[in-house]
Image 1 (cartoon, protein in one colour):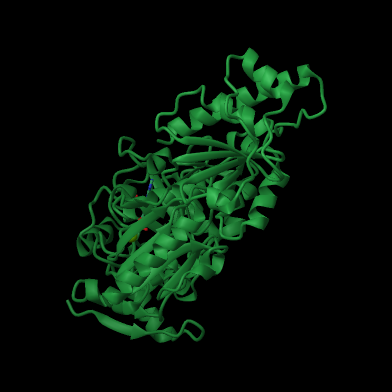
Image 2 (tube, protein in one colour; image 1 turned 30 degrees about the horizontal axis):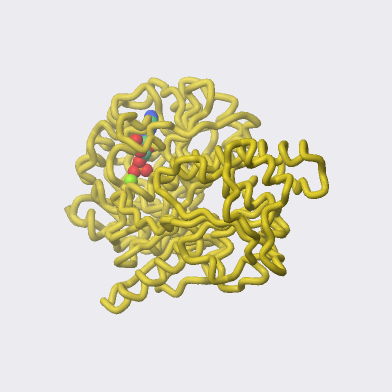
Length: 493
Ligand code: AMP
Ligand code: MG
């Protein structure tokens, strides 16, 4: 079959050519056309023979249902068994646009289009050519992405021609398309709406419009592959870019350093490199393409750009909910290649003001616990004029708890005490700030406020000048806090 390619200006539609395209659809032929997400391969959605042609042109597994494209909300009534109230709300907010809704199918829709399912996926695309084509054909148009199954979704007519030339009647070339990622799919057939495929429209946006909770299909978040995704198509590998990809995990400073090192060495090999970062870290990278997660402008170009490079390095993201879904897809795309830059710490310094009290107690208590990976434990003061023995009341409390105070003297904290593999824990947040201010070369991410690190609300208060009992209370709260610290450290090794 010869594939006719027509050029159409979306701002000035050629009516004659568009009618020709519409007539082809009505005659049961296939026409590829631009939508705002990707190029679609269209056929009459209510004609089982046309649907079969779509599957065979794409080499798509026939259990992977097609999305039906409509041009008017009333079309939904023609194909849905009933139109849920939520569909109305979402349509008002997001249609035409990159949102696909799953509803119970009506009798008009053949099983060939729904892959044998009793539900149907529907969307109103936000593209003048797509909407005009649907209207002129007088049909509803089933349209998956216009590529061979398993290949990246096409964002230009040339990509479509590469895959489908000779197999379909017509390609409408409307220029490069906008988003490059597929539509968000939301299932409205259960009590709680469920996102089956994350996309441009986030669960938060959906939930805001519906005024209720929207969940994400656990099948696409599950780290293992034991749960099946609810959208049949999600089980196929659609999202792997051609480029090699690795995710770099660790604290900010180390991640940035590692990615820059990787960029430099791959650039020497003449490769085109992309880095996926955040708004805050974007500025630190110098690659061919630097994309930021979470910025709308970049989201628009993410899919476009990623197909143009050879190597992708991404920071790791672990924001709640959607972050997890994105991370899961990134991990899949990266073939679970994660470069861990987390530092293996081998030394802890407890720091307080004078070097004679809380920091010494912390050191004494810490030596009482067992760490899976042994660490050197030190105590230092921020302002130490000369070495002093440990505070008398603190000493009394320590000794009564069976902790020896031998050799405990106050020592000034020096920059050289803090190596790359040292964790510094202060008793108060002002002490942390002071360390960061005075030692410009120390990575702030190695310096923690003890209580914050373990997730406690209250800082460890200074008992200085109080009764023996207040020193006892200080000891108890330190002990409880350090127990949590040990648990955390042991869990991470
Ligand atoms: P594509 O046409 O390539 O954008 O893929 C369509 C996606 O929608 C695939 O992941 C399908 O599995 C999914 N889909 C279509 N119809 C249904 C349905 N009735 N229920 C669940 N998922 C669907
Ligand atoms: Mg596809």
